[in-house]
Amino acid sequence: MDLGLGVTSDMASVDPDLLQLQDVPMLSLKPNPYKAHIDELFSQWLSLPETAKMVTTLLEEAKAGSPLSVPGSSFNVNTSMSNSVLPNMFPAVSTPPLSPRSVSGSPRSLMRRHGAGPSSLGSPLKWANEPAKEVIPQFYFHNGPPLPREMAERCLSRINQLFFGHMDGLRVEEFKLLTKEICKLPSFFSTTLFKKIDVDNTGVVTRDQFVRYWIDEKMVTMDLATQIFTVLRQPDKNYLTQDDLKPILRELLATHPGLEFLHSTQEFQERYAETVIYRIFYYINRSGNGHITLRELKRGNLIPAMQHVDEEEDINKVLKYFSYEHFYVIYCKFWELDTDHDFLIDKENLLRYGNHALTYRIVDRIFSQVPRKFTSNVEGKMGYEDFVYFMLSEEDKSSEPSLEYWFKCVDLDGNGVLTPNEMQFFYEEQLHRMECMAQEPVLFEDILCQMVDMIAPENIYDAERMVIYSTGSEEMQAVRKCF
Image (cartoon, rainbow, N blue to C red; front, side, top):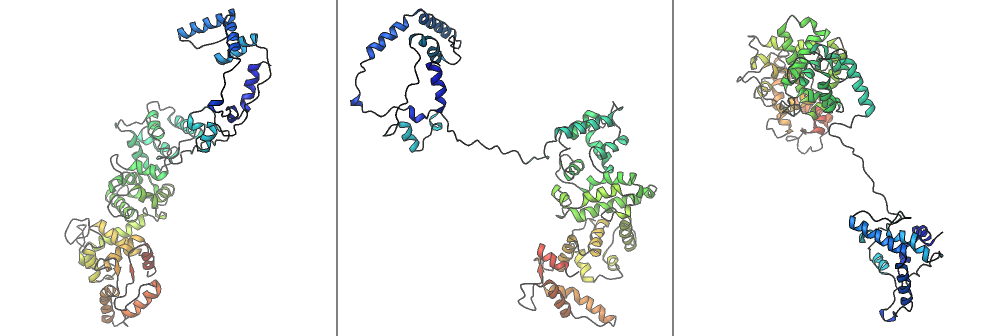
């Protein structure tokens, strides 16, 4: 093995510090006695024909701007010279001994002690144990994680099957199978989804239009709640209104086997749809502003109810929102109280509710619109939507909306705290009724003791100004114990 190859093979195991010369004082340096001999050998090497030819070639390549190359080497000029020309003049010798490690320390050693490493100086030498950078994969995707390739291929294959034979596209009556199998949405979303894709109102949806909307726009990777929210909402809104739910209710009435008997009565179809929407907003729209957000939709139980009604043929078995029997009870009760059938009821009408179960004072609080603002826009009148909210609160006092409704009624000063005086104000009228009916009266103090035992309030400090509970999640749980 020649000198060049030997040095190259050993360089990988050489410590960079060993390549440093020992620090020598400037005064101890002496002229090299062999300099004249080295100059003579260099002159002889330059006079060789091979050297002249190589230098001429390198000069021509340098002028032409091409990379320098020397025959017999694949590295650089210095390496090629040591492998081709130099061995002709100097015989191969063993690898020269390494420089001894400096006692006083080389400049590189001093810099390393002071915190400077090879990488900070731009040196090509790297630490052997330098840790590799850890790459953290993306873990949040706004519209869900990317669709796996295999799943995308299966989805496209099924889409192609459903569009086979329909080169011009699918019409709205043919779109339901696509809504159920590909989109996994309830079947009564078919018309709404169709119109969402057919923005030009052509009456057909082509394969490319569907793929562009459902796959390219990443609808397929969203969760079900986000998909439903996106399909129902208006393009410029980030919430759902009552009008956004009307199209799916119309399609449910037209296609559900449990509602076929309503096809001949248009008025009852509209009242049923309105009642379902009012019930949905009563439970889902907890902010009470008439706008259902995506967060409220996800936290509610509307989507499971939609899936249930899509699979269940008996509409009355779907107790959440869609039961026709529930609608029938609510509507008939309103029609019974509305004696003049102007679709509005006043205080006198509401006092007859539940065989005169409500007191004058609580009815006054309801018509003062403290628990909820009326939507009838008629002074002193309650509309059908307002009555639905009242009846749902009256019949199920264990729900959060009901607890909030009645809490606001009893909280006379609106400070978020109920006191015995406020409760006694409403109980006095019931006590008077018991006395008029010759029944043994139940004193308010006895009822108050029972409530205290059930709620166990912490801040009892005065029997006359006792704070029973205030608004809030923990306090609402305490209120629920009383019902």
